[in-house]
Length: 83
Image 1 (spheres, rainbow, N blue to C red):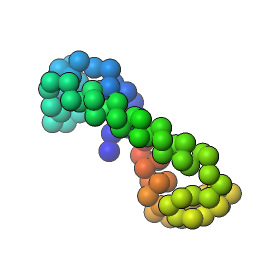
Image 2 (tube, one colour):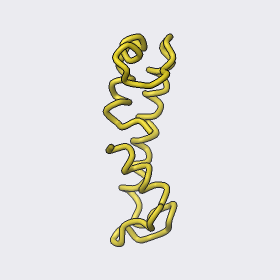
Image 3 (tube, helix red, strand yellow):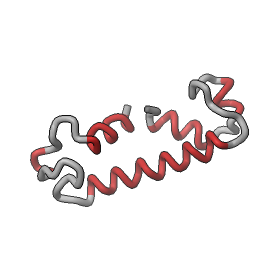
Image 4 (cartoon, rainbow, N blue to C red):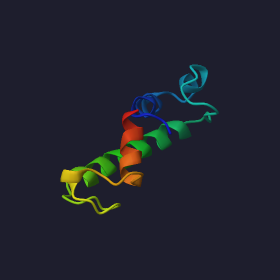
C-alpha cells in the first residue's frame, strides 16, 4: 500500500518523474499514475471522514471510545495511509 506522501507525490507528478525517481515500483507512464493517485487520495479522505464522523465504526461495530476491533479493515487502511 502506498503511503499518503507517495500518493501526493504521484498525484502532482508528470508521471515520468515518479517512474524515474522510483517513487512507485512498476508505475505506468502516460498520466494514469496521476489520475489513480488523485482518486486514491479522495478515497483516503472519505475513509477518514467516515471514521471521524461516526460514533461507531461502520466496519467492526465498536464504539469509538473503545477504538477498533483487532484487524478491523478500516483501522488497518487508516494506519496504512499514515505510513
